[in-house]
Image 1 (cartoon, rainbow, N blue to C red):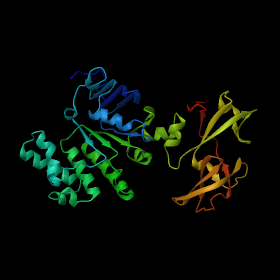
Image 2 (cartoon, rainbow, N blue to C red):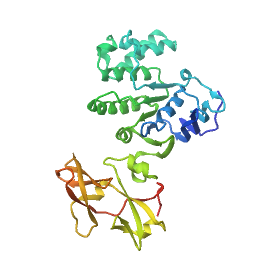
Image 3 (tube, one colour):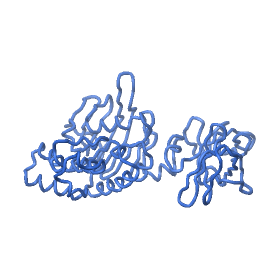
Image 4 (cartoon, one colour):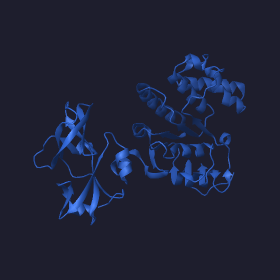
Length: 366
């Protein structure tokens, strides 16, 4: 295996990675460096390329161009094809489906990869006991997959993956088959397991709440490209594109298209901000967080009338969504708020816009 010229600190380095399927390009020129022990989440809508990227990391797909290195060693190259096959990457993959062997007990499922790797029997049995305890499934050791719940099966699948002590853990939407309550519990479990193993983890999901809850680093993918990469709080505070700004965050942020007239930026006929924010552009988009939009008229603040769509109580407040034509706007009301769908309600912009974006989607830095 050839060494890639990369910093020794990088557990994973992806350089200029491209994956084509015929005329379709699924992954487009991806560059990411992941430090040891990080929990990287690849997040984005369906079809954005995140699972294809994970499959290249796992060795299940070879890149069309570019390179992947694990701890300074090239494992895949677009020029040389797959250099290290899936079984020789010291990486474990947890699938969306649990993929347990139905004829083996829980302990047998966990022991199987160790047996394939020719671990001595005593060491193998000791390691099985360790991971059973780590996942809290000691009592299930002699049961078969059909005799345990979906959440327990997922724990067994994770135990089987971490048993060989891989330095890199790969997760392909592992919680998508679980109910909402169990997903929350398993998120905490996966974070605990990540800390306990010390492995560098890469986790694929379309759920931005999972991404922001679990990640030390996030890569937001859209149409095969990385829109932005960084720490979760940095992506929330400083989104560089409109896609990142509206994809991440709960409640979602609002983007209002405005035009320049004189010394003001107007949404419909409402003056929202000084024209200087547009940097000379005739049209831009203003980002308002949901907490920057109040439900009701606020003295001295620009306000407009929208049509009520829905309300969701959140931590003693209410997230209110309303429509202005086809545009959805989300604001926050104190206490409990409700109205009839379609009913006119006033919305006020109680702070200056949080960011300004060009009409083409990139952020304008003041």
